[in-house]
Image (tube, rainbow, N blue to C red):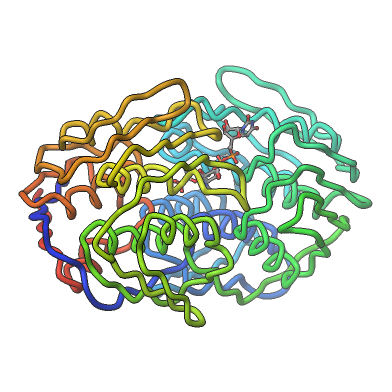
Length: 418
Ligand code: EPZ
């Protein structure tokens, strides 16, 4: 397993640029399967991540032709040859389930493994399946696989019990091919869903309401190609903001969409940092103290669960006691034990973590258990004044392009060790 040797205590100073959003890129890549008409799908600002590579491999396994050039990927999905997603793909990446909707829309059939739970929770697909059945899809589960068939799908009025990001995305993509109008109620409102609506509409779809709880899809459409630029990654941007605070540094973060980051900007200010927004740049400066916080993760536009581990790392250094409550996933505190190894004082009570701030973190051997836990430990190691070794950094490559290069360029001492 790859690992980082991190010598902490260096204030990060300078400019960092944010890449395209992982959580927008993955559904947009799946949506390219819908491009059966004229032209190819050309996606720009796609981050070079292992999850993106996996999605492209799945597209190719289904018969699509792809061409990657830096941050631009061209996909020609006119002739598809398969309907199945492999067990390996699903085990490696839950977002493989985002091919369910597009395959049903294109071929009327899909076979995908039931997603195993993962480190941060059971993550069922009941909302995906309930919505697809409402469109007239026949869903059978056997031998750990979901077999979905639909001779023809008809629009429906669907209510999500949970504002699931993936279920909203899968149903948007399936509904494009359903006869009539589909209404998605209690839909997820993330900016990545707005990106998906915008791209599908450039391909010939007719969707309105993304970003609100009610999305309307006028179906029966045959989509063509597009040229589309992926939105900036709000979670990468938030991670860099905390890097500035935790290393007592001063970072100018470029290519940010501030309106996608209100809770993160508000909480970063609340902990005492100096945060100034100018256009698509956010400057974050440590001001000598870190105040304790009370944070509760919620669906967008609430505080994002994908920033929970990183803020917990920040709170380990606050002057006082903080509380972090995780309401989205039932098991997203895997990073707590590793932060404790660095001297953090954290007690878990149900879905809340009570964090008593310490003056400084100690260097230690720590292990990433998932993507955002890895990011949190990376930040903690940069803040500690001694050396740390962070293992299982493959998790970080899933969601952050060139994190070590970006941070070394602004003063961090990080070495990759095989
Ligand atoms: C997306 O995952 C993101 N991934 C996650 O980011 C993010 O944490 C999550 O949304 C929540 O914001 C991508 O966009 C690729 P959900 P997704 O369906 O779609 C429950 C990262 O670090 N649920 O919104 O899988 C589920 O168990 C990753 O970048 C059901 O009960 O999340 C969870 O508790 C991690 N039934 C909650 O909803 C369902 O059918 C939110 O899940 C579906 C979900």
